[in-house]
Amino acid sequence: MIAGVLALLAVVVVAGVLWTRGRGAHSEMEQGVALFRTGAYADAASHFFRYARSHPDEVAPHLYLARIHRRLERPDLAAPELKEALRIAPDDAGVHRELGFFFMDAGSYDAAIERFREALRLDPSSETAWVGMVQALRASGQTGMAESMLEQAPAEVQALLGGN
Image (cartoon, rainbow, N blue to C red; front, side, top):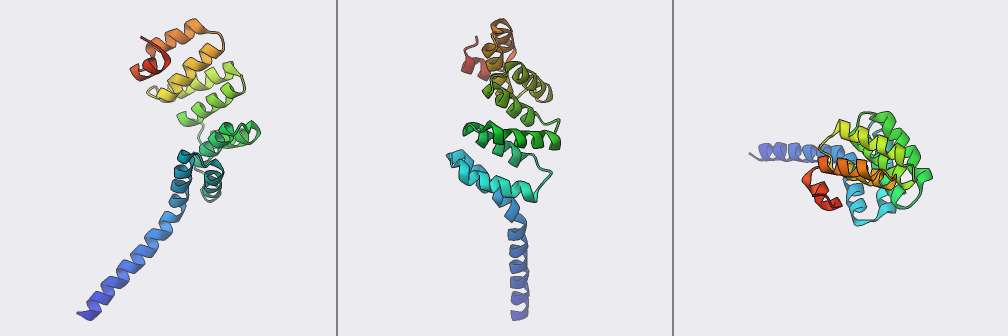
């Protein structure tokens, strides 16, 4: 009986250790996301950086790092993260959305429009891409096209941006 309990306890301890080790990297990402959501960008960035180094083929930490640098008005640091994200996942709608906002920040509205167009092709239900597209069209002076796009956008986007 005691031997059985000890064996079960040993299995539970080993399983716990293995589970904890497996969660370490994911925990790094989760901690980064939690810090990002609170606006603690510098702390979040260190988690994303470590996660990206240990997971070189994952796009998410690069997108978060790019968002952080954009929000902190450091486009020179956002650009390499976006380049790496595009290399890792050229068909990821999130990458194209983030590139669209990057170009919007830089005042390159035509480039932003192209990225939002690609994001919508890859994910037509992305409200964020719809918002970006309409904003980029408006900023570029293409108000007629912006209103046409807004009419095609989901109702939530229309309500947010002043559509019917």
